[in-house]
Image 1 (cartoon, rainbow, N blue to C red):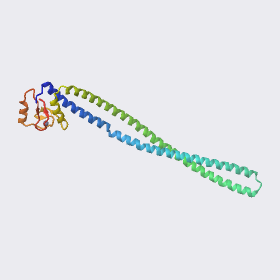
Image 2: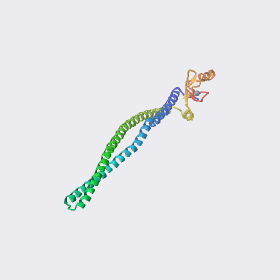
Image 3: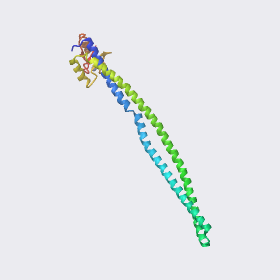
Image 4: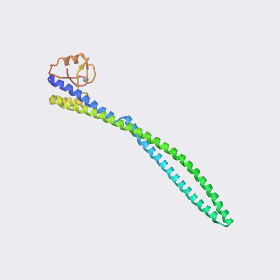
Length: 237
Ligand SMILES: [Zn+2]
């Protein structure tokens, strides 16, 4: 097939640009599918559950403390009433009954206060655990945001390179005759479509060519293009 020197240079450039564009697409996909990003995202999702659990525990303890304090308040009210009654009664029998109730209320109050001390300790532990998870999450979120920005930046860079390569591709496409271009495109769908002979090997398939094949390619006129006998790629000399 005939193709002038300018066309041959354009075809070679087209091959390079298509490889570059394919490489950039691969790089973009690889960058977006960052395993570090996936790990951090999974860890943030699972720690969101831990955080919710820790907060629920915290709130449950706070509710229990309020309930306990309310019980203590009721016991105190009852104690105040009983003491007033004790001071105002003239019946020794009533006084004994009231005193017995006061004693059991004091015991009840003591029990409740012990429960409250335990709950306050639980609350402190729950607050520490909640703060730990919350701090860890904040740290991870920071890392995640940073990583997302880095990935976005890298993808933007790759896309810019891709846009430049695509623009260059349009320019070289215009320099290639349609019949050569369709041959190139048919080949490019399944392999590297254009190559050169370097160190006796085809750069498209990397196979070493026979002396006969190299002679045939060398004997072509300057405005002719050959093809690799191994992979059928268009050979530019
Ligand atoms: Zn080849």
